[in-house]
Image 1: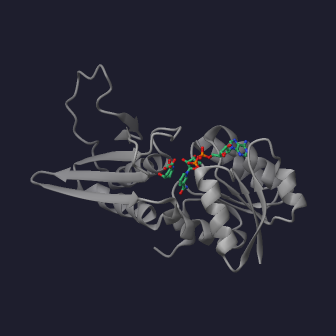
Image 2: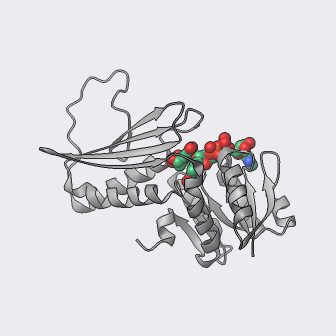
Length: 247
Ligand SMILES: NC(=O)C1=CN([C@@H]2O[C@H](COP(=O)(O)OP(=O)(O)OC[C@H]3O[C@@H](n4cnc5c(N)ncnc54)[C@H](O)[C@@H]3O)[C@@H](O)[C@H]2O)C=CC1
Ligand SMILES: O=C(O)C1=N[C@H](C(=O)O)C[C@H](O)C1
């Protein structure tokens, strides 16, 4: 049995994760914690793995507290910067036996979309990303879109591909969206949506679109449970669930 603590347990993802852990035959939910609770409570409850679905402003401190307390971490919360990841990497040198998985998206389709778009991006002149979410989401662009853009940009740089052509010189209202690692990212917030992403690529006379849709938060659960099962076997920091998959 793997003893699991969930941080952010009263939230949309945390509550869904608690139900998934309780339904898993090889896991026990020993602590369901939220704002105001301390990571020490998870340790006292006998947790081995902490799952964090909280808020971008809290997640880094939660992970450092978990490392300090000797817990493996599976983190779905977004908002991670390169500097914040580097600090976790550094902290883990003090506890080399611990694993930390930080994944912007646990849905299989989203993981595949990120990998496939990075593989395809060098073959297309233009690439843009549209991410679409429920209007209660606090961050924009989404963590998934940021990670997708970073993967595409790295692949294009390695292949020596020129930036996407864009003759826009007049855009006083920001209609061309955010620019993440040189890739334009457009964020839609609409009641009724859950989590969706479209990666659009274009060449003269053709278009290639990769789309992933999470219609329900249960779509993230197989990935979260995979993370919980595997994290102790992957010491150090892993960014992205694909690090635990054979792709
Ligand atoms: N990696 C993935 O597959 C997915 C990631 N997410 C991300 O997960 C995060 C949470 O999303 P939702 O559940 O929709 O948000 P939510 O707002 O429904 O839940 C967040 C919960 O965290 C709690 N919280 C805030 N500060 C805390 C602290 N310091 N300690 C403990 N709990 C604290 C809040 O009280 C709330 O219950 C977001 O960053 C979102 O982008 C969401 C869906 C999938
Ligand atoms: O807040 C959400 O809902 C989601 N957040 C993650 C993100 O920012 O990419 C993952 C998924 O898109 C749902």
